[in-house]
Length: 151
Image (cartoon, rainbow, N blue to C red; front, side, top):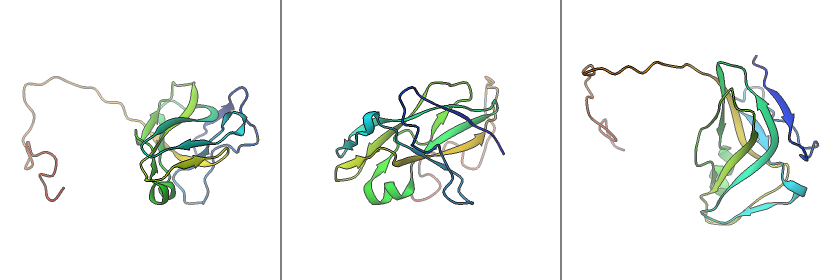
């Protein structure tokens, strides 16, 4: 098990739970909105906002935390994250905020303490990038978007 160290931002509401796995088989830990003064934020259709969590995290070297949408919010309300998956690098120590987008047709209110995204801890492999004169051939070759079948 990987330990992610967590501290709260100054002024964050300490009653908002830390990220947690809602079931024993969950890959993502739900993270919650920690809104100033407990005020809600309403997102109109097409609007996006940076939602504070009130947290800062310390990720061990060799890992990242991916920020992903919650499927229920996406299906029922069109609430998603425009940079999915967002990556939090192991050397970042700033505030953890979640960029939320209302891709739905109705306004959506994000309330204080609401689960807004999930955090997935993943190992990181760094590569070297080498300049070469040519690449190896494959069956697919230069075929791009949709080249192996229907979109």
